[in-house]
Structures are given as structure tokens and as C-alpha cells.
Length: 95
Image (cartoon, rainbow, N blue to C red; front, side, top):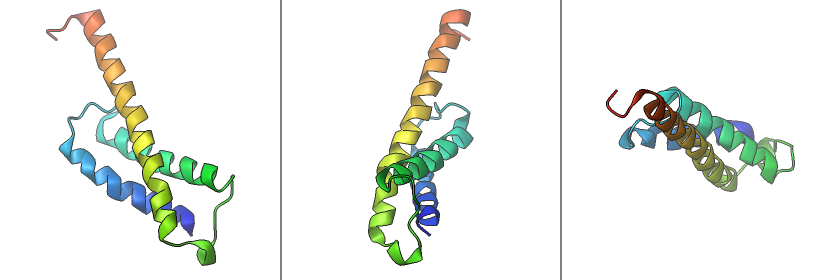
């Protein structure tokens, strides 16, 4: 059940990317994947590779997903910025 909470929390945070310039690798879809994968991986790390069941899921489960979602989107953001810089270096800044 915590896996569902992690994913839903990541999707909720992902919605705020509408306020950011679209510099994510693979655009908004990349940001979505970064948020979801980051939240799930971080949740698994916190629980040492296991997914808590329904009885062990609480509000803290949602809070555990926030750093992972932000880190995941940050990685995708940096990959997008790096790709833009590489493209500009190869093709000139005016393209």
C-alpha cells in the first residue's frame, strides 16, 4: 500500500512542474518519470528494500516520498540542462 502512496505523492508534486521552465530531459514526461521513480526508489531505500503493507502505511509514508520525488526531478532537470548546453555547444547558441 505504501507503494501507491509514494506514487500518488510523486504525481502530486509533479503537478508543480507547470510553474518551472521546461528544461527537463524528455520534457514533462521525463519530469513525471523522474518524480515517480525517485519517490519509489527513495521509499525502498528508507524501508531497506521492502514495501510496507496496508497496516504499516500512514502519513509518514507520504512524507517519505517527497525527497525522492524532488531528487528524481532534479536529476532529470540537470540531464535536460546538460543536453541543452551540449546542443548549443555543437550547433551554436542561436539555434
